[in-house]
Image 1 (tube, rainbow, N blue to C red):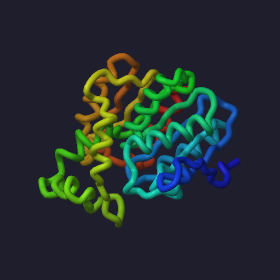
Image 2 (tube, helix red, strand yellow):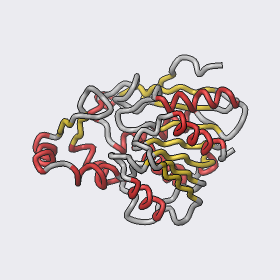
Image 3 (cartoon, helix red, strand yellow):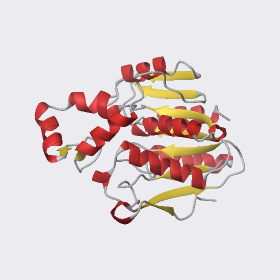
Image 4 (cartoon, rainbow, N blue to C red):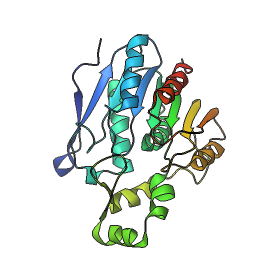
Length: 258
């Protein structure tokens, strides 16, 4: 059985309205698996499809979604912020999944996953969390990884014009970073204190990742002092970790959580 046609969840009102696309594969075995993609990625990426195929084989539920401005979801990408994409992720998770879930967060999705866990804790819904598998988690990336690396003229353009375009190694289209993304990101920073996952965490991190240095993953581990965490460093791994051997490690991590 496949996950069928995409479904949509309407969010926001008036100029803020957007349709969030998701695919929900049914399955009898728990916990389920939820895919949270990275910045400018979508639910049809290599790792997302590999997880969906794994869940099909093992009769596990699998939920994938596109944030607004990503994939086939509606909304303007440049209106996107960490808070906005968090709100959408949480809404889809609460509407389209039931029972314990393993959150699989890739790059920015790792930050989103930890923010989702914090929100679920505040809502008294920690029974939804069975574990996390994080791939090159870009926690606090807007402040810790992006802003310090931008040249002064780029930072000035963001503050003056509200946006800045930069060529991407992952897309023919340039990445656009907005003032709203930077300023909203500062409202959701996690690394200033203890970080809670409220469930076991397995982190996969490439040591040749040019975007999220492996030292950043070590910093996250130091902050996850109250929850079980395992870090796997892949010596020749890049940022995507989409090779067959990398995907096998991801599947092993998810399988180890039930």
